Picture 1 (cartoon, rainbow, N blue to C red):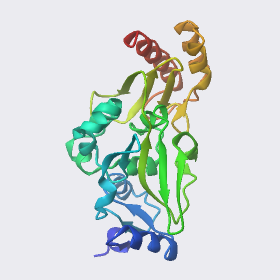
Picture 2 (cartoon, rainbow, N blue to C red):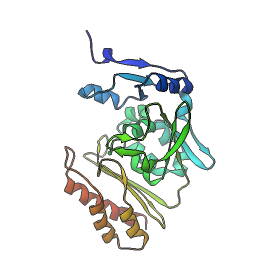
Picture 3 (cartoon, rainbow, N blue to C red):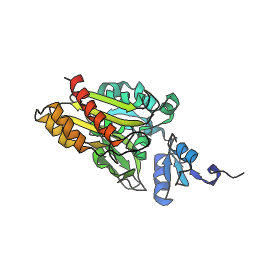
Picture 4 (cartoon, rainbow, N blue to C red):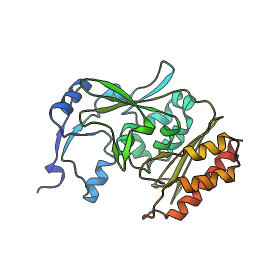
Length: 273
């Protein structure tokens, strides 16, 4: 009996060098590791890719380390490893807050930070954290390695500047000064897709990013500017409601998301005073 799985092609490189050569020479190949998104697509019949490259064995991509005072998190670092990392707790504790709210224990054990980035869902819980952290996405191909500011990585809904021959190998995060803050609003307290998610940093130049309010995760520079010049939080909340671009969908409504975003902004400002 033929199933959708039997119609798929899978390659399994033994090294990063071999994987990059496969991506260059045998495209199109879709990288997979934890498969927490791929299996959902298989279940719902929405899978479009048919040829995959399994990079789960590339152990160097699991490293979490400091390099030149930058926190480097490998693309294959699982949410569980992020939660347990003393380095992440010291440098970017809101990433741990986000990781703890991604699915259940099974998803946290299998899901990877690189997968969340590559999937590009505007509801991805880790993505607003990377936006306010001003992270760099490290992309590697056979010929080059390049670093792309996270805020410039996405070009549209689930679309990015990554080329077919490139692989996300790590995320680099510079030191952050200021109080970090994260909140996720969903149907339940856990194991729910975000209706809205916000990450922020309280600093002389505040940083605020939101998910589920536009076609990609976004920073809100007009709102940040109001707070940076000493404007009232109510003024910033009005600016935020106008700056985001939420839609009505199965999980929530445009009006609800605008209202909750403004409330979260007020909560962030009060909590970090």
